[in-house]
Every structure is written in structure tokens, then in C-alpha cells.
Length: 319
Image 1 (spheres, rainbow, N blue to C red):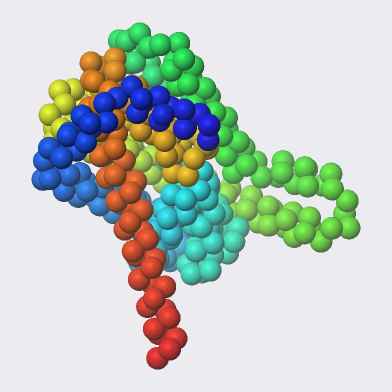
Image 2 (cartoon, one colour):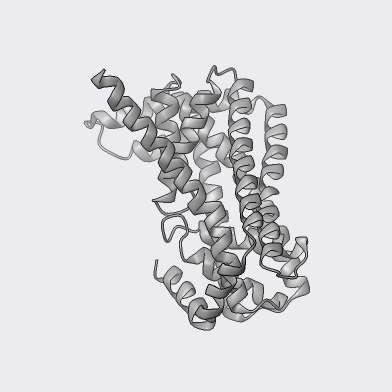
């Protein structure tokens, strides 16, 4: 949390707030609308990915249920620290309670989807780091932040893979507790069921390949949104360059520090744009607009959707 506040504070101190305000006022509204439309397409693609994943695994879940699950997951992960841990718990709960999937199956499906998407993201970040190192000289402090963030995400990814692929190892840890606790027996039974379900899912190798390629395609929309917004702010930068910045910014923001990666996202993007000869005020302006399109806009959609569902359920009960 302190690191996120420091990065944002340093970026704001470095930038000219008056210039940021002026850039925000001058942004082309059409570009902002296009950015939001691209974000809506991203949301639909993510839901389509989930729908076809569940269908290929033989689960009968409607697109409406998938959409509800992702909206609840988006809202939850927006108000909890990053790496989307809170959102994944919400997805498991909804798949279990509303999708009709057994708890172990819901956990396995969410875990496998997370690994596929996360692996695609890590590969894109590794390529981005290599391209950045080859073409630019970064300051020692920010280079350390990039490497530290990448290492943390690699460790989290390894832990995720370990938990999903080898859940029986967790049973060994649980068995260290006294046998008198009933929750240990229930947890062991659940882990055993999850292990069986994961083995069945892993047997669908074609599903893995298709989902991985789809994840790469979906991640490709993230720099496209950033690049579109640069045009609205009259920032001269290539698509490859903004792609590198976008992926690395998300990487730093994903490290669990603040809800939704707030602070670390804006500060990281501002600093990463400096080697590309983008002034701090324009860099911070771009970060704010990109953040609005990819975070606040999505958060508002999910909040409005869940709020309308809640009030609709209240009215239904009264009638």
C-alpha cells in the first residue's frame, strides 16, 4: 500500500496538475467513447471465453449466469487487493450456488481458467520486459520495481499451479493438524474431489490450447484501448511501445497492494512513458483516462448491474 501511494505521489509531484487538467478538458470525446466500446467488447469476449470453456468441459451454464458471475467477480476484485483473488472466490460461489456446479467442480474450473489467462499475461510481460531492456535504459529504482513485480507474479503463478495441479500436497499440510477437528476431514474430502475434477479437466488438451490462444487475443485488446486513447490526447507513440507500457503497468498494478491496483497503475504508467519522451503531465493524463476506461467504467457497469439485480429481487419478493 505504501509503495502504491509513493509511486502515485511521486508521479503527481513530478507532473504539472494544471497541464493534466488542460489535457483532460481537450481530449476528444469520440476517442473516449471508442475506448469504452472496446472495453465492452473485451467484457463480452471474456464472457464468451468462460461460456465456451464451461461448454467444452460439459457444464450446462447459461451465458446469463456466466455474465452475472463475471460482473460479481469484477465488482469484488475492484474493491479488494489485486491479482483478482477476491473476484475468483466470488466466481466460485456463484458457479456453485447459481450455476449448479458442485463446489469442487466450480473451484477446478475457475482455477484452470485463471492459470490459462495468467500464463498468457506472464508471457506477454516477459516479452515486454525484454523489449524494454533492449531498447531503453531505465533508472535503477524503477527497474527493481519491474523485476520485483514480475518475480512476485511468477511466485503467485507457481503457487496457483501447485494448488491446482497438486492439491493432494495441501492434504499433507492439513494432516499436520490434530484429527479431532471436523473441518480438516471435510477439507480433505473437498480437496480430493477437486483433484479428481482437475485431472478430468486437464485431459482436454485441445481446450487448453484454444483457451490460451483466446486469452492472448483478449489481452491484445488492452494495448489497443491505450493506443486509441493516445490518439485522443495527441500523444505520438507506436502501438508496440504502448503495448509494452500497458502490459508492464498492469503487471505492477496486479501486485497485491491496493484495491484494483489503485495508485500503482497511474504512477507506473507515468514513469514508464518517460523513456518514450512523453512528458509526466501527458503520461499521467493518459494513465487517468486509461484507468477510467478499463477500471472505473467497468466498476460502474458492474455496480449498476448488481444494484439493479438486487432491487429487482426486492421488488419480486414484495410482489
